[in-house]
Figure 1 (spheres, rainbow, N blue to C red):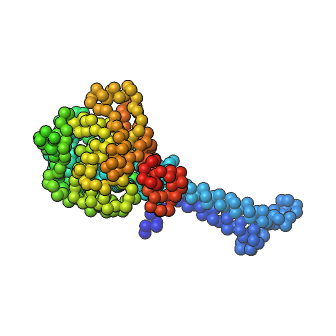
Figure 2 (figure 1 turned 60 degrees about the vertical axis):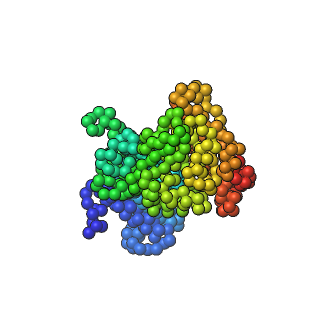
Figure 3 (figure 1 turned 180 degrees about the vertical axis):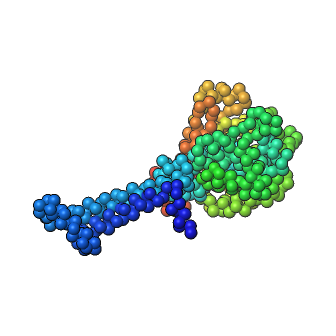
Length: 452
């Protein structure tokens, strides 16, 4: 019964089936003429007789020539019909993307052969990096913090009891393979409306999906399908957690949004409850990873909260993947005022233990004076690359120029991806894995831990 549905009116299939059928007939007839098999009998003799009368004589090569012409015409019709049918079916399955069919096939077939990359963090820094990584591989898993309690996420968390969707939303959009309009829709923030003002449509969508499915993880999975996400987005835990900070002056603060306080230096951050259950899929992704990237993003409120979930840092430490910490380009007021690259690495070690990362990827180069002055006025400065201090902590510093400057200073997604890919190749070469030897010849220092 299902087969006959293809013949229903308006399916856009019958016409192409007829074209393909005609092509098959012509090709078959052409073959019989070329190899001199008398299949059509009287019809074939009649055609040859007609040609003889038309030409006045009948050369020996006429039958193969006619057969070749019919065969080529038939194959052309078959190709034309198959092309039309495939386009018709694809237009129904993926509307609007038929013109980019080559890109669709490339993304589906080539990118899924890339390495398994797991990124851990949250915020805009992570989203920027993911836009570059998804052009290298589609085997991406983003493990995102669940401690957000500010803005739209905080309101939904308080009013509906759902886990904060904000960082999840940003990560989904960064990995999306959909049209720009869909991305704009998920990032749209209501500016008016009682109860709606300040909310992001994407946050409301994920919250509604959580109510429908009854499960936040399933809601994220379904939202990923809507945005055709290239990879996976996972919360680090499904437990409701609160991020807390203890300052060097002895004071404390509770709630992610309350932690950044200019003038107060953070001693440590911790979660309550202290033993949230890690997501099994997140641990599995870390165990199977070829590359693990921490950051970029707010050190104390985006990166470290994930590492405080029991099992996350332990799994990273045991991994054979190349483990990279991407250091922020600029300091962050109230979190990392006056920090150097080594201070970032030291905070990682103090919270998650030694042996967590192999490399610290640090921007090298000056920021334009105009932008540096703009950031200085709001209390931000470039993070100095004190490579000797980083190396003394047991982490190999790798410096690269990786900044994109417009009206903001942030990592350039493409340059950052190239740096991560080079480190992965160098790591493979050092371990004697296939595919990495060419990099060992080009960058011998890299195989001795660092130097790229």
